[in-house]
Image (cartoon, helix red, strand yellow):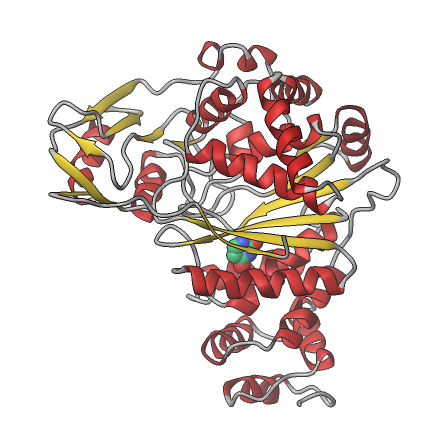
Length: 438
Ligand code: URA
C-alpha cells in the first residue's frame, strides 16, 4: 500500500501498476489537485489508471471521504424527519423524482433534495422543474429546511460549495473518457448523498444501453459498493437496479417530462414510469422503518387520494411556480412550435435504442453539451413504443417536438435507426432487475 511521502508521480505509477493506495495517499492526491499543486494532466493520468486497474472498495470509500471533506455538508438534524434522499445514476425519460418526492412527502417522509443540472444525454431534475413558469431552484439552506418541515419536500440546486472535488473531477472525467468506473461513480454519487445530509438514502442504479453501467451485473456491483459505503458512514442505504435499455417514460425533454410526471400524479397515466416511481417510494418507506406491505398501501393511497399531487402543487407554490401546472400542465408549460409524428413500421418492436433517443433530444435543445449552457424547455421527444409492442403502419411511434421544421426533419431522418421492428415475438425487459439491501 502506498501511503507516506506523497509524490504525485509515484501515486500515479502505483495506481498504474495495480497497487492499492492508502486513504492518506488518496487524500493527499485529491487535496493536492484541488490546491493546484497537482496538474490536470496528472489527475487525468491517475483517473485513467484507475479506470483500467479498478479501485478497491476501501479506495472508493476513502475517495468518498476526501470528496465529502472538500466542501460544505448539509445539516438536516433540525428537521423532525425521517429524512430521505433518492438518487438515479442517470437515464433517459426518467422523471421519477418529480413523482417519488411528492409520494414520499404525502406519506410523512421529508425530502430535502439537492439536485444537479443535466449534462450529456441524461436530463437534470432542475432543468425539468424550471420548465414551470416562475419555479425557483436557488433556495437558501434555511429556506429549504423551512419548506421541507412545512410540506415535506423541496428540490433545490446544489451549490458549488457542496463536494467541490467531485464537481472538478467529474468535469475532467467527462472529457477524458474516465466516467465509466464503478469506484469513481460510487465515490462521486455517495459523496454527494452523504453531504446532502439525509438519514435514509435510496439509489436507483440504471443498467443498459442508456446508462453508465451496460448490464445488470455491473450495475449490481456499483449498487453494492454504494450501499456498503453509505452504511459504513451510518446512513440507512439501499439500491434498486433498474432497466435502462429503453426510455423509462415516453417523454424525453423538460416540459414534456413535467407534464408526464403530473399525469402520473393525477392518476391519468400508468406504465413503467409510474411503476418505478411507486417501487422507489416503497423503498424509501421501507428504509425508514415501514413494513413492505404497509409501504405499498401508503404509496398507493398517496397517489389514489390525490395527496401526492397536492404535495407537488404545494412545492410549486413554495418555490414560486405557477400552481395551475398541477391542474392542466399544458396551460402553462412551454410548447414547441413544431410537432411531428413518425409512423410507418409494421410488426413487433424488437428493440428501442435508448441512449440515442437521449442524444437526439439533446440535439433538439433539451440537453446541454457543455456545463452552463441553457436548455430549451419546450423541445424533446415522446417515444410511444416499447419492446414487445405490435405496431401497424398507422401506429404513432415517436412524436418530435422541435423549434423549427428543419430541426424536426433532421431528427425524423435519424429515427428509423432507433426502433427495430421484426416478426417477433419479443418480450419487454424486466423493470427492477435487482434489489440491494431491501
Ligand atoms: N452520476 C454521478 O453523480 N457521478 C458519476 O460519476 C456518474 C453518475
